[in-house]
Amino acid sequence: MKILSVDYGDVRTGLAACDKSELLASPLTVIKEENAKKCALKICGYAESENAELIVVGYPKNMDGSAGERAEKCERFSKLLSQLSGLPVELWDERQTTVSAHNYLNETNVRGKKRKEVVDAVAAVIILEGYLAYRKNHLPL
Image (cartoon, rainbow, N blue to C red):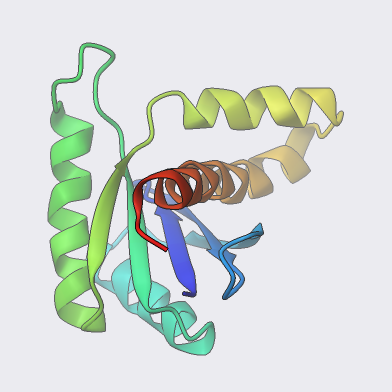
């Protein structure tokens, strides 16, 4: 199944997608849009062009597992995305993904403007990789 993942942010939103076999997650783009509805509509366009059947939105819970203000914003955004796209949208715990993305970019020596442009897409890949690993280990064949 083709799955699109979203690392939703107030200014930049990272997107990643996997292949139909759910083996490889790849970065797609970073959308620079502060308006939630406009951002969701742009994501719908990517979902359509990628033939996505499911959208996974990163759900940034607090370290204690509670849902803070940012998580609630992502919940609202995922509902909007579901309404506009007509696709199922799932929330996926994304604690520490942006930290992991920064660590990865440190290891690959990506710096400055280039780093700012890709970190959200890398975070979306990490979200999708976690979700795909879960599906592989928890869904019937």
